[in-house]
Image (tube, rainbow, N blue to C red; front, side, top):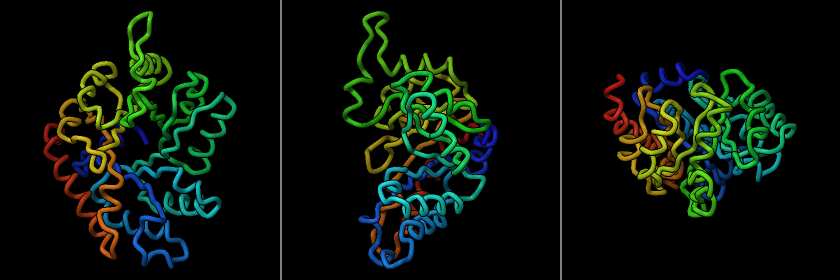
Length: 272
């Protein structure tokens, strides 16, 4: 998917919502566990009730690969079921030496046909560049994340230029890709820094997890993170897909997605 196509979807739906499919068989409603493929059935019903309100879905790959072959089958069926105009994110956090990254890229971009994949930058350019070789596919590079351990490395300052590590990741990676194939993960709980991050990479999209159950502030993220083509995909996972553990789980998920979409519509007025 191109940047223009993604922005058009944002305008069409008045939304920059990404729904995270962190599907845990232990958290889904009990009545689904008798289904032949409970993971897919859960995802199918979530998609049926949220696709009108979102522009992206983000399966967290760990929830699927932990189940072995049946998990990969559920993921493949889920990916096939997602409407083709909706952006897909493989939240896989890959990143390894060149030959291995080439195979990861082939797996997620060719075999499974995701639009994008999250990538860890720690091993440098040769672990990232193989993902950038695919036309109309995206690398979503980890930049400044929301987890407590992000401070262990991401905020370390260089003795040379004083840049924090996440700032170096942002500046250096601009040599590898561009606003048409490179996004960044910026945690919603880092809203106080998102304006600064936007100043460093004014044109790139941000994938922003942490809104909802993790306490991220959509108002602050939108105010400081938007650019002239929106530039945001704001993810909510647990707050949507686990809004209910009863038989009404899918309807409740739709209601929560609609609430976020309606709030986003107000922030998008300048683009509509």
